[in-house]
Every structure is written in structure tokens, then in C-alpha cells.
Length: 125
Image (cartoon, rainbow, N blue to C red; front, side):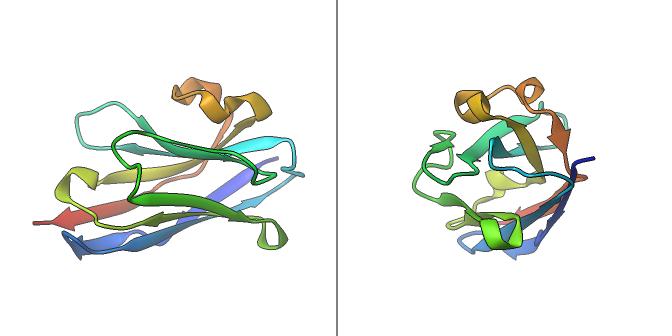
């Protein structure tokens, strides 16, 4: 059974940085794509970034390109989301997800099979 646990959320001021972590367990993820999504109050869950577990390819939403970086540490079975230059529009619950290899370019949440419980990120102006 796949288990994803996010951590690293918090409250910070605009312009700050935060790194989210997603600890993955339960299977071998070498053939998986790992993604980050976020959901703000009253809005639909939206794609943020994705990476193939092999680390050779990444994909980002236009809204975070140049500010966020997704990476993974195979030895620790952990995926990271480094978030810089945060603004109030980035306020949301951030979710880690795992999906099939071909999910890298999928921005729909239903293309991912496994989800963490989410971690809150709040950016004040």
C-alpha cells in the first residue's frame, strides 16, 4: 500500500521561501511520476509540478515556473518542492501525489492514483 506524507508547510510573509517534503513508502517508485498539487479555499485542486522518479524530467505549472523547483532523493524515498518568492496567491493546501510514469505531462488530479493528506502553506502580504 502506497503511503505519502507531506511536511514543511507553514505561515510566512510574501517574498519568503519554504521547502515541502513528501516521504513515500509502500512500494518501489522507480516507474512512477511524483507530483505536487494545491487547493485554495473555494477553488479546485490545481497542478503545481511533477517529476519522474528517475529524475530525468520535470513539468511545472506556468504560475510557478522560475519560482518553484521539484526534486527527489531516491535514497530517502522523498520528493521535495522548493518554493521561492512566495506570494499570497500561493496560499493553499499542498498535496503530494503519485501516478503512472506517463503522468508527467498530466495536469489533472485524476491522473494520479495516490495522495498524501496535505500540508497548509499560508503566505501573508
